[in-house]
Amino acid sequence: MLRLITTSLSLHCRRVTALSLHLRLCTTLNSAENQQTVEALYELSVDIQRIRKLKGWVLEQSPAYTNEIAKMLKDMGASGSTVAQIFAVHPEAVLCHPDQMQAQKELWVSVCPNENKLVGIIEKFPASFFTCSSYHQNQQNNITYFQSLNINNRIISKLMAGAPQSFSRPVELNKIMVRTLQQAYQELGGQEANMKIWLQKLLSQNPYVLLKPPEVLRENLLFLKDKGFSTTELLHLLSKLRGFVTELNPQSMCRTLDYSQDTMGCSEEKLRDIVLTCPALLYYPESILAERFNGLLSAGISMSQIIETPTVMELTTQIVNYRIQQLRAHGYDIRTGSLEILNGTKKDFEVSCRKLQIRNERPLFNPVAPLKGDD
Image (cartoon, rainbow, N blue to C red):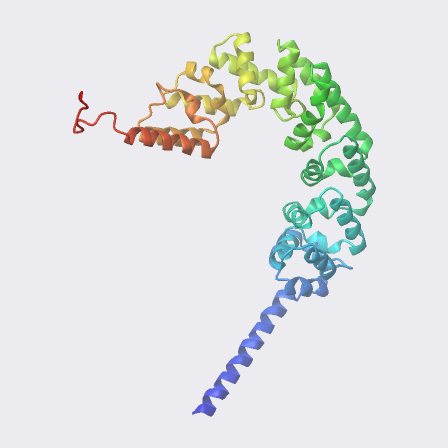
C-alpha cells in the first residue's frame, strides 16, 4: 500500500513539474522575442503579459540589460517587487546600457543623495530616470544652472521627475523663461529678497511652467492689467495660481470672466474682488462653471452666498452635494449658514462635522440638575 502511494505521489509530482514547465514555455515562447530578456523578466516575477500588451516591441530588442539594471536598482535599495513594478510599467529600462545608467544615477544622486528616496522617485517616474544618454549633458547643465540660483535640491529633483523635458532641453531655454518670470515678479512689485522663495514655490507647484513660451506670460499679464487688476493684484494672482498665466490665454480668460459676471450679475470691480479670492474662476471653462453654479443653486444656495464665498466654486458638484448631505445629517442648514464650512480638504470637513456633532450632543440645559442656591 505504501509503495502504491509513493508511486502515485511521484507520478503526480512529475505531472505538476511538466505542467509548470509547459506553462512557462507557453509564457515565454515567441520567435520574434529576445528569449533571454523574457527569461530574465520571468525570473524577476515581472508581468510579462502586461508588457506584451502595452509595449511588446521592447521584448524584441537586442541587446537588453535586464539583470544588470535590476542589480543596479537592488544595490540602491529597491526590493524585488519594486524592480518588477518598475520593469512592468517602464520596460524600456532594460534597453538602457548599464554604464549610461550608472552615470544617470550619479547625476540624480547629486540632487537626491538619499538612495531610498531616489528609488521612490524612480518607481513613481521611471521614464524620467531612464532617459536617452544624449540628454545627459543638458541635464547636468540644467542642474548646475538651478543650483546657481540657490534653488533647493529637493525642488530640482522634483522638477527632473515631474517635468523631465525641461531638463532634457538646452539650458539656454530655461534661462530665458526664468529671466522672464523674475522680470515679471520685479515689475509687479515683488521684493528681491523674496524672489528665490517665490520662484521655488512656483516651480514646485507647476514644473511645466518652464516649457511655456515666455510671450504667453506677457500677453496674459497685459490682458489682466487691461481688465483693471493692479500690479499688486497681478502679483497675487501670479503667486496664487501656480503659474496659471502660462496655462491660459486672453481669449479663454475673457470668455470665463464674461460668463461669471453675467451669471453672478455683479460689477467689474466686484468681479475682480471675487477673482482675487478665488483665482480658479479664471481657468475653469464655461461648461464647468455652469455645472457648478447650477449644482449650488439647485441645492438651495443663493447667488449672494456664492458671491460672499466664491471659493466654494473650486469644489466639484459631487463633493458639494455629499458635504451638504453630511451637514444636514448634523442639523446644519447650508441655505442659512455660511458656505465656509464646505471649503477645505476632506480632513478639514470631517473635523467640522465632528464639531457639529459634539455641539448637538451637548445639552444646553439639564432640567433635572439641582439649581445652585445661596448658602
